Length: 219
Image 1 (tube, rainbow, N blue to C red):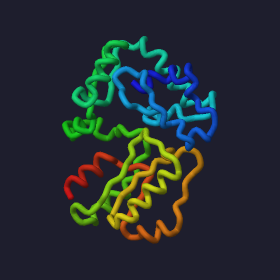
Image 2 (cartoon, rainbow, N blue to C red):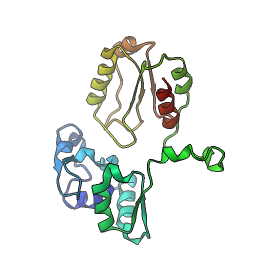
Image 3 (spheres, helix red, strand yellow):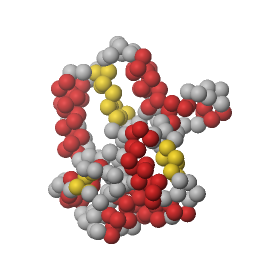
């Protein structure tokens, strides 16, 4: 539903962002109350592809074009399930062609172990499998897995604050930090952070989530 309302953001002047100060001055915290069935949503809670200051941004304009043509589709499939987002699915069904919830897809993968499609991944990010042997060497119930998913974005200050929270917890952790997780300039953690977490932390840009979660369940 958030993607479908990108054009509305442009029409009322909320996208693209005016300048980089919008990342940190509270602009993204304003409430959006006009999207059907999505209550208490802030601007920053919407898919982050609109988070650009460039009107000619290719990704931003690609989503505008795609969503403007949704009515031409014979059906829409969504990676979710009815009991999780029934209100939003009902709203979509009343606005667009038939909508079918087909998730959660990872549960279906285990039902075709010998199928040729087993070799096909569903992740849009390059997966780093080096974390798997690292997890194998950890004790049961000893690792905190942190992954903000493929949409969430944050400021450099928020990332550093979260990192220090992990460091001060004294727990072993595996942290996935996407290359586009941080808004604006890149973030460099101080050497003190590396010293504090040495021997009990692993950071990757992405991972094979299904295997990681299964491994954590076995802990």
